[in-house]
Length: 254
Image 1 (cartoon, rainbow, N blue to C red):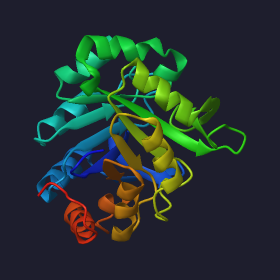
Image 2: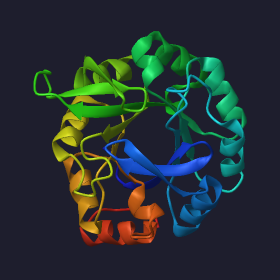
Image 3: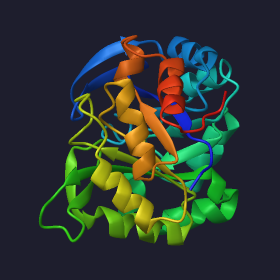
Image 4: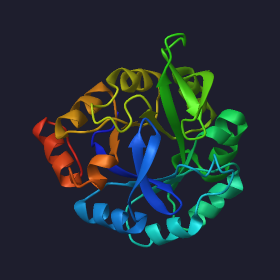
């Protein structure tokens, strides 16, 4: 859909620290979000995604001070998610420096929230975050989860993505829980299904472990590729990923 592929480092944050696990479990600390965001900005990241992965589970708001300090260090779009329940939450996040806001569990609980946010701020601000798990019994073979991947729903992932776009979502962040943290590559079947269903940009997330993993996700239909642990560990830089994409004939922002 997009002519230029975006490369997006993701900061999964809990208790003010960047964390990462495998399949959303056994989280371990990876560093300070502000310092890491600055590092990725300097490496040439196109955007930064900041997800407070325990805000919904703990029934609290996103850590606004960390978001603000992060926004002060990077001068590229910043997407923030976690604990967003109302359009007023979105207003507050935009006020501390977020450019876009991701919504997941609250939108599943009350789909009208999507329209309320889109009507108030515009679809370009609203990112539907989908934590998706394989489920052979679902029509598409995938269902969405809530509460940071902890709670399985019976909501078909592709049908929900289609409905969310109709309600005003301007972008889909599609994270495969099955692939998350495994470093075995993106779930290409999931990416292709979302691309076919959606008329808005699709961000592929979950499973990146090698420079060769990114181009197939774009070929499958992703407009942007997101990764976390390979960046946090220093295994790859943003430049490494962009170089690999260019080598495969995919245009990136220089």
